[in-house]
Image 1 (tube, rainbow, N blue to C red):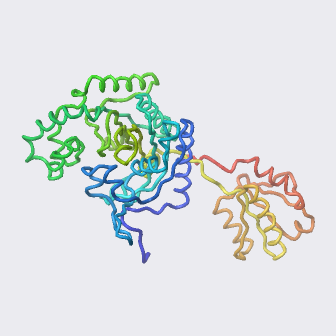
Image 2 (cartoon, helix red, strand yellow):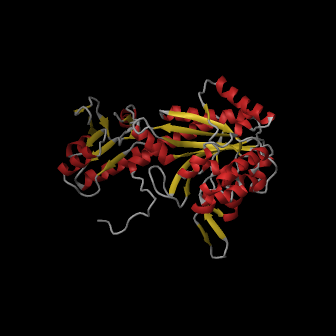
Length: 433
């Protein structure tokens, strides 16, 4: 029994899981770069006002979930609960708005929220995300949704659907707010205490409440798509036509409002359908936030982005039995005497500098124990260094998959051929289901 345990809501990522995450992250980075996005890295914590302003004071994140503390100077600091606000802060502070627009940025971050722990939801979690800053074009919305679509296709995710909605322009939402308030006011007593407070500041947030009694009330609420201004409706139609042109299937869902205050116009979710349970879970969410740059002290520039929960994505891929290319060590050198070990160390050093994954025993194990260790760790090849090999300067490789030695002999004074023989066989294999 371990004396110390990890904090509730956190995960230990062991080597095999790290290999799987690394493959997902590499595919994400490759897809982002194919769309001309560059990586950005931001601090783990920010001044609290960045999130109060950027995420929105009526959001559950700000009201209930942020890890906030005072530093030694008495300044309020918050561990980032999401990526967008920090990226936009960096965009403004570093003057990226003076560069060629739009600025296309992607990131891989850890984030922190003090929320209820459940499947796929942790207090420290990880996000893959994208922000496109400086483009008002509805085709940017299409491009970003298509980026997620391509990533999920290339990473091998199945059984998901795209749902999207339009929240209209900030100016155009005033009429919808009035219609929504007119509907909600007679039902005030039926709403939870949080929603009663939200009605005064941002009634749209009531539509996103997960409390069953509130979900029942909003079933009869007016749809925002019925209240869009003509120009907002036309903009949304352009987005839909762009997706149609790329043969990307989607469903328009008026219930999607997203949980953060800064969204406007196009909002979307990629929803994973669990075939066994019949339940659906959001695996990616995003949308447009045309007022956020100004809120964080920058010029009046639009933005669009999304985030993907890495834990939830990895879990979904596991459930779908997705195969991974797992790293397999190349070579184990068996040596026992001091002279043999010294020669082995030179070979190991040479091959490691060439990128070969190679290991020798450093614990003084017996020949039998070394062989047992080698087999347990699934090495591809074995090279035995004994007295005969040292005297003749000639060694042979044993293929541990077939159990036979390669016909070719290798000279210890020139390791070029040995390196070629190992490198010809891939060190990556697809793990069979």
